[in-house]
Image (cartoon, rainbow, N blue to C red; front, side):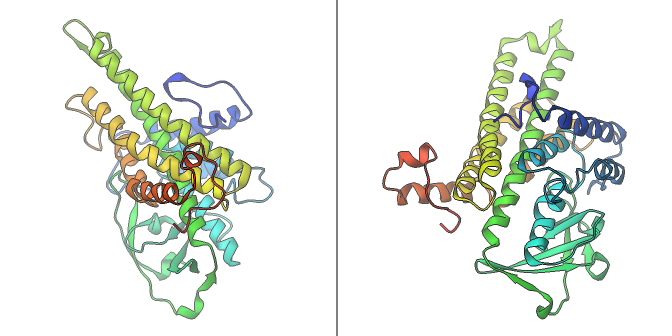
Length: 350
């Protein structure tokens, strides 16, 4: 499966080509309109959200008659991340709408939503039409839908400038609905979404590096003419393709089996571990190739590299997912089954 095709190597046309083109166009317009206007925290892009909502892309996988699923959601998330569009599509579509549906709770039909699992770092809380609060209770979640106007919110941001707000919640415990068995799938969905976004950010970092080394001259010739630079670019591209292969595996598993399945659990864990190794290598090389620039919010590279670094740590960092793989290997009669993905049970509780 090549749902996440693209990057410096391009991609062949397929059934998702028109969707990629549509989201890329929205993303490109958003990026261009905000050059020189980024802030900390970066402002929610209401204009881009309006375009996405008009195109039916803000709740693509959570609306029954939309015809969208994991493959389409992956395309949207990658493209928006590639253009650093500051909107909570992952939180709205894959997380908040899904969990509210599991809990039998209503959410607003329009507007951005957010998911609050850590009240100290809630994405886009100040910009959402509603917040779906999910408090852990063993394997279950205690879920409620809150109007942000009823919450005390202090604005903040993650390492990539995206809104991550602190929320004070004063709500009667009886107003929460218990949803059994939802905690593991919620974590899996969040990790899956962040993997798709990381691929988009890494693609942007490589594209920016290729363009910069072609345009910047040293000793009378472009930087890209130097063999050491060529080797670095090739290594970056190779690392991203390694991460893309793992992320495509996670997409294929979600398409074939759904998110509540052992195969998807395994694939998402592998993708998270692989990308956790890829991100530091790629962003270090990207900043090295840019020399003394690209390390502040005013530069486009910063948006790609810092968001990739922030996203890869959310919904379980690399060490967390690596330990899960290790425990699975130790519990399997033949570790080769883990290497080739022949897992027969979920690793969600291990």
